[in-house]
Structures are given as C-alpha cells and as structure tokens.
Amino acid sequence: MTAVAVTGPGLNDTMKIAELITPDRIRCDAEVSSKKRVLEQLSDLLTADDTTLASTQVFDRLVARERLGSTGLGHGVALPHARMEGIEQARGAMIRLDQGVDFDAFDREPVDLLFALVVPEHFTDEHLQILADLAEMFSDSGLCEQLRATTDPTRLHRLLSEWQGSETAG
Image (cartoon, rainbow, N blue to C red; front, side, top):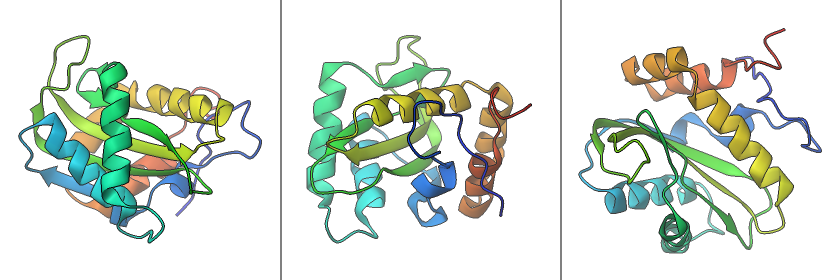
C-alpha cells in the first residue's frame, strides 16, 4: 500500500495519513446515537493498541475540547482532537456512522464521518498543520462519498492513505 503524504508544509517530517491511523483504529457502520457515545468509541479506538494511554483520559480531553466549540466541520464531518501528555507521536482513529448524530456542527447537519486525533502536548504547530491537512482531505466531496460507501476498514484506510491533496496532486 502506498502512503501519500498529507499535504504539510510546516511539518518537520512529512506526516503521512498511514502513520496516523491503522485499519484496527477504523470502524465502519457504527451504530451510535449520541456525540458522547461516539467520542467514547473513538477514545477506545485511539487507546486499544497503546498501553500508555487510558481511554477515559482521552475521552476527557476530547470532551473538554468539544466544550470550547464543536469540531464539526460541516457536511457530515467532524475532527475531534486533543493534545495529550505522555504520548510521543500523533495518532488517529476514524468512525463512519451508520446514521449521523448531532455534533453541534455550524451547518446543523448530522455527522457521520469522524476522524479523531491526539497529538503530544508539545505539538503546537504540528497539531494545527495536521488538522488543516485533515480538513482539506475531508472537504473533498468525492473522497467523502467513497468513505461513506465503504464498509471495510482496510479499504477505508487505503482511501485515506492514497488521497492526494492539492499540493501533492501535481
């Protein structure tokens, strides 16, 4: 599988989407009825393969960030995120919901595609750059259509990993 760089001037090392997420941290057709429950599931996914992180700790940070303002981007997409002490690299998890949930997005549309991101506490510029790259990726309506049509986590991972943004498309 080819990992194409998520666009990222400003990143010290080019961050690849495949370095943020694995198929094991992706769920398709999840049946969740609330923002709180989807944040719990994302926290579980983010910590499932990392014994240094506690799911409740990640959940608390994601909820605290949401209290500052919704991470719903609109068009059914949200990017919940937080900075965490005790981790060395950024990591992501994704859930594609069977039916969208209210996420307090500015367009008031239910959210069904969620990509959660946790980064080390000292990632400031990197954190913002990764979020900008993810926002660009998820603003691609063609990609979002493909993600919504996919029921296989490995296929969804491949779509994310192979996506090329405006700066890498040539």
